[in-house]
Amino acid sequence: MCGIVGYVGEQQAAPILLDGLSKLEYRGYDSAGVAVYDGKEINVIKAKGRLQALRDLTQDGNGLKGTIGIGHTRWATHGEPSVHNAHPHYNQSRSITVVHNGIIENYQPLRDKLISKGYAFHSETDTEVIAHLLDYYYKGDPKEAIFKVLHRVIGSYAFGILFQDHPDTVYAVRKDSPLIVGVSEDGNYIASDVPAVLKHTRNVYYINNYELAELSAHDVHFYNEDLEEVEKEQVTVEWDVEAAEKGGYEHFMLKEIYEQPKAVESTISPRIKDGRVVIEELNMTDAEIQAIRRIYIIGCGSAYHVGVVGKYVLEKMTGIPVEVDLASEFRYRDPILEPDSMVIIISQSGETADSLAALRKAQELGAKVLGIINVVGSTIAREADNVMYTWAGPEISVATTKAYSTQLTALYMLGILFGDIRGKITPSEYRTMIQELQSLPEKIQEILGDKERIQWFAAKYANAENIFFIGRGVDYASSMEGSLKLKEISYIHSEAYAAGELKHGTISLIEDGILTVAVSTQPELYEKMISNAVEVKTRGAYVFALVSEDNQGMKDVADFVVEIPKTYACFAPSLSVIPLQLFSYYVSVAKGLDVDKPRNLAKSVTVE
Picture 1 (cartoon, rainbow, N blue to C red):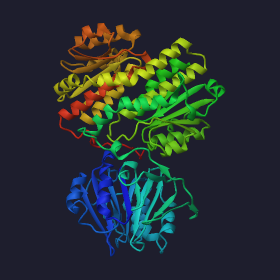
Picture 2: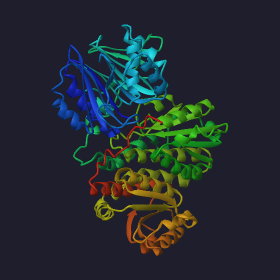
Picture 3: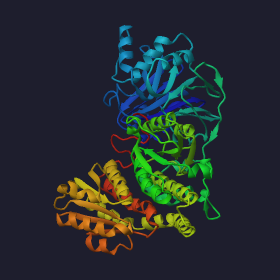
Picture 4: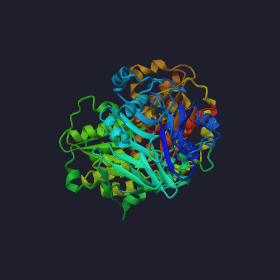
């Protein structure tokens, strides 16, 4: 879980590598390094900590000369964060240099074998095994050596490789870890994500598993496992450079919170035609939709929370039973999928390792898979049977905001479409849902106008040690997301509970002055949530109520209230999540933390 950048061309490589790595900082990392060939040897410079330390060592790249190189930001898996564990890694003669994303699961037996052959290791990483294996198999043909290595390793990987014997070529190969190739007139690039190359090109190729890319300054070739050259389709990335920049905001997270009205509109507008929901990319007939017996929604982290909302929404709108699974658990419980089932995989990046494994397991079991994805051309998007893109644009901050909101919107639209086709929604209800769906961007914008009150309140609780979130129905799912956001970027311990479960044990955690966030947007549950708020307040809690504007009873009980505009009850999570995102953001800012790059976390989780 880290960033890879490579370049070969007419420009000096090191400044390009450093700039590309800076665009991948959101992925999370604890060390960084670059390798540049200067015409005589491959020079490697590495540093622990933030990218600025590497910039200082290389004079912003100007201290390293050469027009070909690879760079890396590392998120530690094998071995502590340190200079000797940082990438790039190399063989003993430093004639082969490697950067790697992913995990080599069988690295220990490979390491033992290489030691028995006389190889010496200088790091604790699994990646150094690759450098020595390449050395072991290299007989003059880099492609042949690379594929021999691939046949020996088990795990996930994306490799960028330099061979000193081939000083004009960068090699790249992947399995289950993202890697793209960018092409331009001034040179060619490899990267683990699009933002790293947007400054230079929007023309990219997406590498498939076990495909090898061979890049020179003016040519790119791709090969399969049989070393046969393959033709690939070039894709034009629609994002522009500005979309991946802060645009005057202090943090990407705040920028992306404020981009949510536009992002939600971008998800909705192409799919509403003449007042009807039309999702052409589903490629499903009415008969196939009517035949669905069960829906399984699978995701990780915030995507899982979207799935929890989806369970409530889809069951209510469509009458189809819905199961929600954590992707990391799905394939380990020997899942039984009913015939005529639909599996929905939700992932912002489309590269989440656990979600990708769940997708493949579902397909093994005979299910058709729909991917709800943000990144065009990502692995899940390519492997799913059908894809519904959210069109949120690049999301840089590790803590998701606009991707979450657009994923919710996608599920609402599925609910409306399926419910209508299955006869579960009346014409009057349908019109109301469409109107309310189309009004969500405007209502999100209205909530963003109340940020000053939330900022003031967040500053009061920046030093809290424990915070609880409670809710019922879809509000419980929103509470889960609010709690996750807070702990992700503020490092405050927080937990979300179904409010009705408080009396079954967790109310014992309530102490004097402890903040409890009560989310209450569902009219049929107002009275029960008021009772829960009274229960915790009686035991000393300070109650922050997040309510629909007509929930007067909760306003009378709570100590601090944030209102959201009234909407169709199933759509309330799209509005209630906004104040929760702002609260988490401003708590983190008040604590002086690195909002966009929280410790120990990565944006695209490409290891299991």
